[in-house]
Length: 122
Image (cartoon, rainbow, N blue to C red; front, side, top):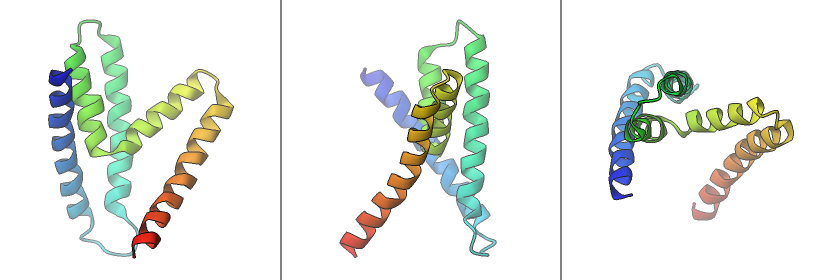
């Protein structure tokens, strides 16, 4: 358990650093659109989908390696990628109602939670 936590932590740290660097680079063009976040979220979704597909093809992949890449790196890079993968998993299982509740609920409640936190502490 401790080993897995450390593996996820190291992957998350590397993913977070990469997210920060890409956001810095992308924010050089300040036209009001959050290009850095947008680019990281789309890239993270492509990355987690690619890793998920690749890792599911190979039986001998270490669970620690999967944890490092998918939970650690991708989770630190963007949780949007995990959110999107979970949504696709629900669609693949034909759980359309659960998928809709998850997607809409996450976005709406997420924005509301940010607003609540911001406005109650401002």
